[in-house]
Image 1 (cartoon, rainbow, N blue to C red):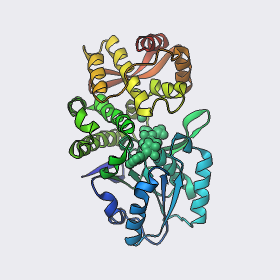
Image 2: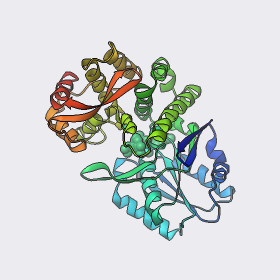
Image 3: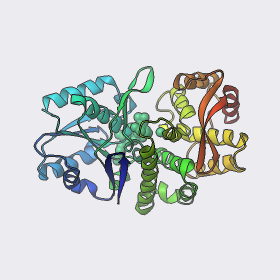
Length: 360
Ligand code: NAD
Ligand code: ZN
């Protein structure tokens, strides 16, 4: 299947299916990537032994000149240090304004390689080749960044890809915990936008967890389509796009306070979404909002509670660093029913404190 992300005058395709790595050259040609300048593939050291050779040889056979850069797997790689190494490699390989950078991997590689592509010579072509479920979210929408030691995603630009080439065959090697974490962002797209899709994720949780190809393709298509619609309406997050942050204010705080790694991103936002649903129900949202959200997340084997020893005040100050409280209130994405959220600007710090305590 091919979906299209419409952005004013521009648009780009998201191609989703099996066996796509084997026809990558054809897809690059279709979006006008010329073969006279070298391409650079950026990937990490988990993904490289699995899929790099396949992509390299497919592109080489298709007439492209290819150089590859392998970075260490993990969030710590989204740094200015690794960024600088990649720029050095790009210069040494002779990448020029007509070159493209391909991100083969999950959100870490996508965000990092995208930031290189968005800034090298003031921006060159960028192709996303996602290999995680979570990356159905991160590869669409053009937000690319590296982390600063004091804050996540602090250094970045908007740089849309020319193509998202999503070969679902690569997902078969994902560790189960990464599968679950990726499904968290998938059900998020249902919870903010589409009640029927949220229900579908719930009903099909066992198939999704078992990586049933048909279920996976449908869920990824639907998730990407929702993300694409939202990004089309608000590319630079002036208003609507903020709804994609459901569960993320508390989620980011959980990741930071627990120490990166103890909670995967998708796990942390699952707890964040449970908290937001509880807040939503308390603020007059539909009855059953919290209970149903919890059941959905549990069906996907995601966490919905906080460890007892997690310090509430540490979470509160981490949230404060992420999003400022103004006069004791903060902007928070709050569900009103399954499939709908509001951007609330009147949530009291004390209300959040109370919810955190109740989730322990
Ligand atoms: P990731 O890129 O770290 O991948 C998770 C792990 O799986 C890594 O160890 C990786 O090496 C491994 N892996 C990847 N593909 C594999 C495969 N096919 N088989 C086996 N192992 C594989 O993490 P992620 O969850 O994909 O992405 C998280 C990142 O995405 C975070 O940095 C987050 O900030 C970012 N993100 C960005 C956006 C955005 O809009 N730009 C949105 C959401 C998340
Ligand atoms: Zn996220």
